[in-house]
Length: 137
Image 1 (cartoon, helix red, strand yellow):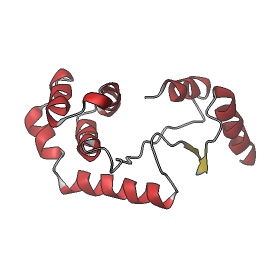
Image 2 (cartoon, rainbow, N blue to C red):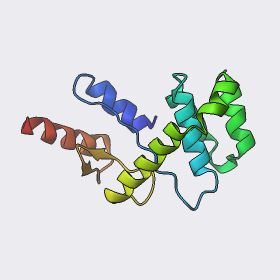
Image 3 (cartoon, rainbow, N blue to C red):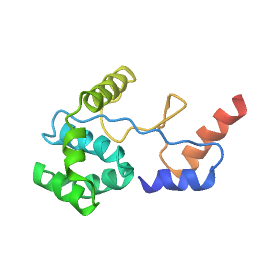
């Protein structure tokens, strides 16, 4: 998880929920495979760990690296391999991609607070948006 998001959660433990959506960029040949793999890891309770390893290894990403990450996280490889090609997970990634495109996402990471694009990505800017949304309730 991005350090900024960790800070936001620490400061707002009872009012903020992080929702991750996949938006595999078409210009990165392994992005969709990585998204499918992260969702397969989620089936074993390891989404964020897998996600973070993918981003740590972004420049070295390959099918082999994805498998190495799964092994490093001690995933059940038979289940992992089955899940990452399952229609359920493929549909979820495709739905996230369509939702992102409809919301105007052009790159990653893109951050929203209650559907509003975060433009000021400083902790203070993020907090201003959160406080503004909370005042609406």
